[in-house]
Image 1 (tube, rainbow, N blue to C red):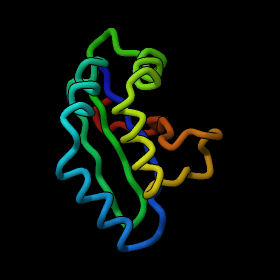
Image 2 (image 1 turned 180 degrees about the horizontal axis):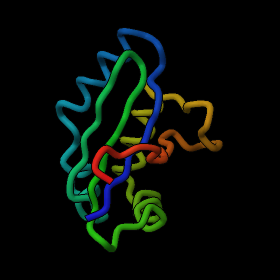
Image 3 (image 1 turned 120 degrees about the vertical axis):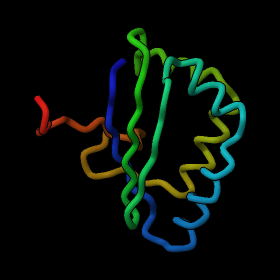
Amino acid sequence: MKSYVLACDLKNDPKLIGDYIEHHKKVWPEIIHSIKKSGIQNMKIFNSGNRLVMIIETNADFSFEDKDKMDRNNDKVQKWEELMWKYQQRIPAAEAEKKWVLMDKIFSLNE
């Protein structure tokens, strides 16, 4: 199993942050299905203020490129992403049109 950590920011507005959290208490079933179909076996999102951190655990065949291609061809995922843009914003290190940024591991206690 592979693990990845990604970061994203929310717009710094308490109402929008609250709404974003509420959406994630009832993620659309089609989104859950798409996540699992891509090879993601577990996903957790944490927040502090307007910062988000996502941890994903994937099967050995997972590819961000393949997931991105699947997502671009899925109308429900596109609608979800459009909705999420209302709440999210890129961190300074993000490429144009990318919200989530893959983080580099710089320390591990047990390695």
